Image 1 (cartoon, rainbow, N blue to C red):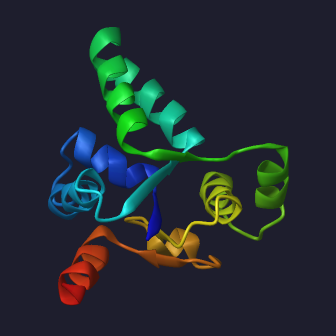
Image 2: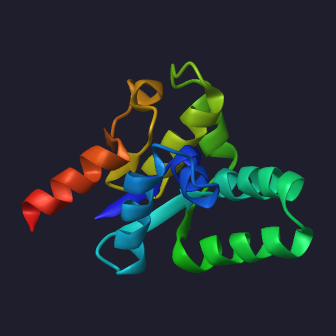
Length: 139
């Protein structure tokens, strides 16, 4: 299963945001174990690099980015994705870009802590807790 991780899920793990960390890190562990195919949007990488750069040294931030690039596949953002996102009907452009990028990359679902932001999604959207619960039921 090819799953796009919303930026907030990655940040929950990197900065250990409570109470979200537990299920978000469990989802990332599924990617590390190659039980699911993890994807992030290229805009997620730049957003996280910017935010980490404000909090950490350049070297520490770069290590986190390198880890993400090693662990995850990167979904495409190009002119067509940006244009389609602009006209998708989503309230938030960033979420629309993530969604259109996932569609363009032929992904199966999205994991986000903010499902309401993806109410117009053509893909299944799960919270980290929902996703882990589903995977545990399948095993």
